Length: 81
Image (tube, rainbow, N blue to C red; front, side, top):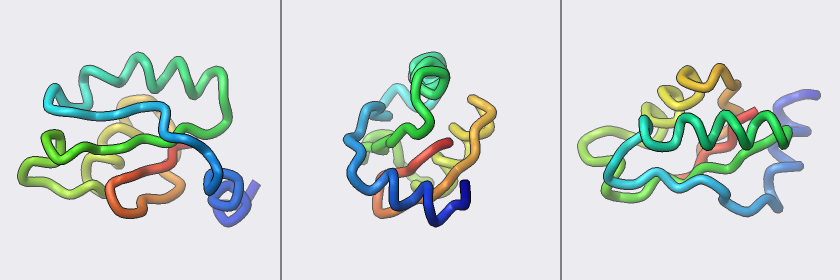
């Protein structure tokens, strides 16, 4: 599936993972489990998680941690495949 098709599919998905003040390490296992069950996972990065970094950087770091592809970041939300 192309990235464009995956973005279309992700459009109506609900956020199922929230990254807060405890950072990415606290959601790696949950995100990996959800990726095993579903093709796409939508992740929201709360203000406390972002601190001095960008959503794009955090999303790329989380994607690397769970061996997933980062499909898209929009605002403070990312889609992983």
